[in-house]
Length: 373
Ligand code: TTP
Ligand code: MN
Ligand code: MN
Ligand code: MN
Image (cartoon, rainbow, N blue to C red; front, side, top):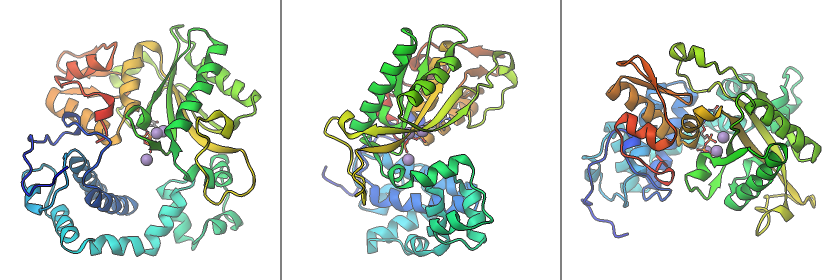
């Protein structure tokens, strides 16, 4: 679209859950820079600066045209002096020297590399960096480092998992999991969630919600599914988290990031012949393999919590964060993947669908394809 200095824009909310954000990003030159800064602040545990840049990136993703003057950002929420200065530099010189410095920074590069391994978070990466490790080989060969089983799987499949997953690959995995689940229970329900439900063309993993109308049978269904995948020879790794969900604990529930539903973080083997148009070519793969490894998440909420779990797992993370913030600040309600607590009425609000939840919050419904905040 034609860029104009002062694009006629509807006023954007400071809440991502009140903005419509498609997968089409017209301001990638800025949002890519902001994301580098956010990540760098995250590595230094500067949470508020990190969040400020994440919010700024999220706002720009919802702007329907490329911004060509920093003045056009004046009317946008969540863009402070620092973010505007970075934009100004990019507009003027094509890049930000602060961002370029980070990209060249040894520590940033190392933390980025180490956290690219499944099972290695910022804390472990930092420890390895401070211990003098500089390559993945260092981490594998250092006798003082005891890798856990997740990290071992992460290293073993690092090349495959680092490669993004295509939509065709996600669809193929959906077919395999669906067929496998139906082989266990005719009532099994499997839906694609995460980035692919938001219409993204590529992802770092594939996320599914699995459930059954048979009360209390969700986790056993998931365990049977994983077992069946193992017998089919396509299970490369499984990290299962048993359910800690208890409906009686709900009012006291802490509204943290990780939910209490049973879930499995998997690595699955996907064959070329199973994917329409074939597998994404894995770079540097010359070992004649006809398969690749893919990261898959499966979460199994009880059916009556389905709408909350679906909303929570569809993302984006920024959209979820602001849904919760909006609920808290504007409605005195607590929202998480399990439910919605109304602190005025002192009761849980029920929902059969995502639409019900938006309605409880007094928000216009936003379809998944427009939640790419
Ligand atoms: P991700 O799979 O991390 O992200 P994504 O699918 O949006 O993008 P990508 O292509 O990089 O995979 O997370 C999907 C959503 O799941 C996200 O909104 C957070 C949510 N989630 C939980 O609610 N609980 C969890 O334990 C995890 C791991 C994710
Ligand atoms: Mn995902
Ligand atoms: Mn991602
Ligand atoms: Mn995921």
